[in-house]
Figure 1 (cartoon, rainbow over the protein chains, first blue to last red):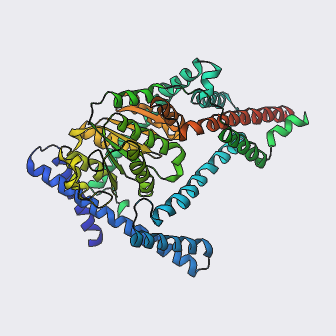
Figure 2 (figure 1 turned 60 degrees about the vertical axis):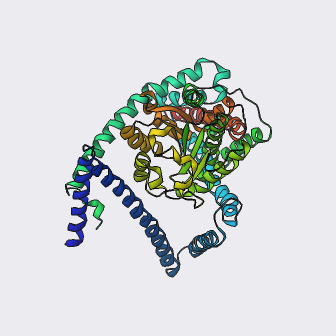
Figure 3 (figure 1 turned 90 degrees about the horizontal axis):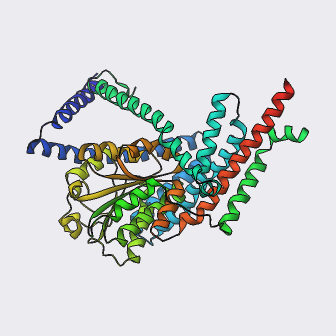
Length: 205
Length: 273
């Protein structure tokens, strides 16, 4: 029972104090705020430790269960080796750690993301169909923006980039602003619910 | 008729092959398509351009290698512009996987302009909590970053003699492939009135227009095109300029594939009726 009540009390207290701190422009209030910020940084660092521990546990379990063993071993070996190389040889420019990052991680991550272009081309070809008026309008807007945001748009006609910009600035903006206001109100409501202990999902199971 | 029906079901491997060929060709032999300068890019350029010598810019390189081709040229171009104007630069990253890329920008670019570490620029590295870091910048940078990336005490660095928090910072530029620039808006702009600009991937750019129109962003670089336009403005064409031709061709190809797919779809639909 206390496992839930203590975190909920801390959450309520900190939420309450930081909310009112914002409206109290005194030196002790500012000092309290600065101290809290440093505490948050310290606590957040533990999240990284927790993430690494969780990753290691997950993959050790997979190895024990004999599921996708090569991938899990590759991940664990890379994790330990890179960390050790960083600790022993340093992380400055030109070190082995830096070379691993530049010549292994960057090409791998960039390639993974670049493959998306091919999937997008194939998916657009299969899924973008002018089935009704709404879909046709969406298609036309997509064409104009896609052409308008590349240099070829200017070559086709000077109005193409302007029209693409108008689509982004007016219809797109209207929809996005509505969503942003909704999200903002949602954040406020959820924050109040968390502080008051109504929303308890963050406590886990 | 059979050919038109075939258009609706082209094998995806053929699409991949055509796309690959048309992306590789302009990378080997650039088409040198004309690059303009859109309003959001020009606004950021003008904002940095009008800063007095010695003004401080924070460059937050909040991206990892997955968005390297779009975001990295932006960071390089903005760092170059800052040094060209003799502004001081504070570099950091809020993405743990972005430290290596940010380090590259903060070590290579200053060398080109003979800038002195600690006086003209500093690299703070990574901090884990976005909210606390952004808010901490508004209180005292040295408390949030007691040490820089290289282990120097920030207290001892000359740049921090007259730079304590947002009050002394002219602009924060957040380069990101995620929603991080919005955090800068909510926390740094909302609470401290800090001027913010963003550089984001092309797919994310549409999300940021509301903030641009309200003036919460002083400028916006969207995707490789934004980076290429900035490179043109600072007259230093490199990564983005060479890649923009391939991006242009891939856009045209995707549009063509969609048109072809729809022709096939309409033909099939008519036949079924």
